[in-house]
Length: 441
Ligand code: UGA
Image 1 (tube, rainbow, N blue to C red):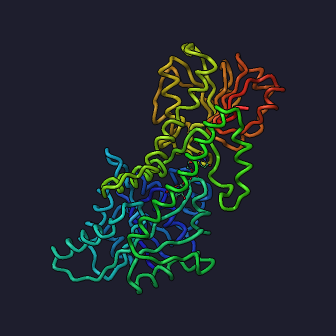
Image 2 (cartoon, protein in one colour):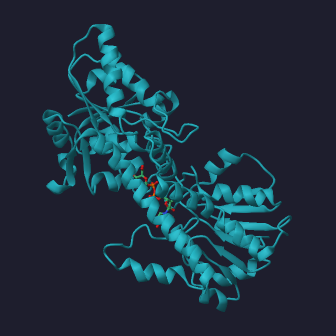
Image 3 (cartoon, protein in one colour):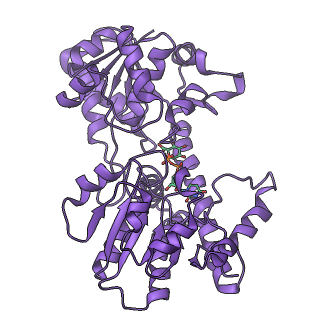
């Protein structure tokens, strides 16, 4: 099928590339000329395992094109995806200006019957706005062209996005139009492993499903972080508790890892936006508000542990920081807990030597040159001249470090483990003081 995708961010680029991979003819549009030029040369600016070679292969095969020309893209397509950003407004609601700008462009240039697909994460009711915007533009031109707006939320995880797209848990299609749902079924047929994974529903339910999924996952994390706080206070180990509850299939093993708080471009933004929608409808979303409040508090917990150890004497101390990205396998630092921690350490007068396998240049971009941040070339380099080690992102290569070497390098031989990667007993044997999350034993 002939497909065009507006937006070459995570979602747009992964969607376009994976659709091309199974044989669809795809044009990706972006307003950023430099980005489009880079993509044509096979340069992918985000770090996403497996994506860059797939982009190059499909581009070389002539199935995947990049352009800044929306007119060409609209003329090409029988299905047009809207996959542009929906950043949070000042009040936490999703800012729809980019989505609606694309809708206007589609309305201005549409000349053949087209299926318009909302892929961006958008509040309930957005498909109606997109439909009205396109219809207005068509009316202005006096053009009577058939189009349908479908909601198709995405469930990709950064770091595993290609895999998530190629083998989805489920594909959600929001539409009341039988022809549109049939077309979407054909588009996605190569990815659907069983019928029950392709779920068709009304548009508003599809829009809400996306928020409900992310809010549920964020709730699990905040819940575990709250249990961790209790465990710490009552002298229990939340890691034991996690193992004790995860085997119950009703609870499950996933997303019950306590830590430094959830970050990224999705959970913080989506929990807030859903809460905002509820408020706008006169509701008090107590649970969602609490999920966010717990997470905000959790992002400060590592610093509290540092203070517990050092008291108020952080000025002049140097901390090695392992990890900057909001989670492993990405260079993304949006809403990363590391950012709050860095600000707190700096405000207290401490220096930081940080290492992240992928996010150093992103940190450089965010913070620029500053005397209290050194971006190091390896995890062991970060330890040089440091008093203590703080781990905040659980990259695989941090899992089994040489504790003897760590103890030898650190002045104070203490580790603050923001992801509970290490065994407190093992560290005690190595002569290292240990602080984890919710490990009050
Ligand atoms: C999340 C969802 O998992 C995807 O399904 C969804 O499509 C995506 O948002 C989106 O809306 O676009 P992502 O933000 O890439 O994906 O990352 P996750 O792997 O979900 O992790 C989010 C945060 O939760 C990270 O900071 C991670 O460290 C934290 N986390 C995760 C925990 O603290 N504990 C856990 O047990 C799991």
